[in-house]
Length: 173
Image 1 (cartoon, rainbow, N blue to C red):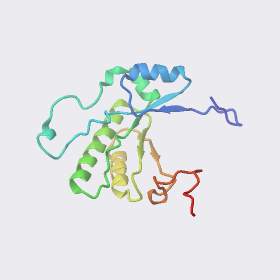
Image 2: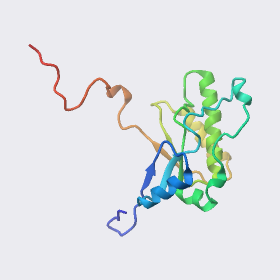
Image 3: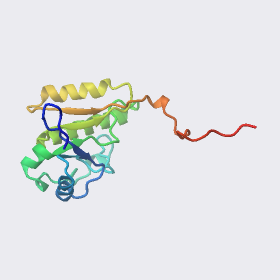
């Protein structure tokens, strides 16, 4: 691991989007020299529905068991990640309300597990509702909440998928 000029240790983690077996993946990540694992708490294809029937009343587990790791491992080695589909600032009201409920569910599960940090990403420049929900979670919870927020370095309109860098343009005759 890297050390700063003051001799303090720098912590480095592995960010994964799919973790089928938490304990095995955590062991593999530790063997590679990483200090923690960033992983989604809910399966990426399991989009929960809080508004519409019949999916609203679907029974069954929402996520993996909290017993897969001991409490100390959850508290020190896992960083939770927000599901990619959640957009609490969506323009469509039903999608926004569903995302709000899912975000609250994921934040509460993260707090229940005692995760040290919860990582989320900004979907765009307008995130007032996301900020409101995070502030509400911080003020109403009986736990410490730390967030890592992934901020895009370029505006979406400044990136183009049809341009390949370092490729010569079309020849003009």
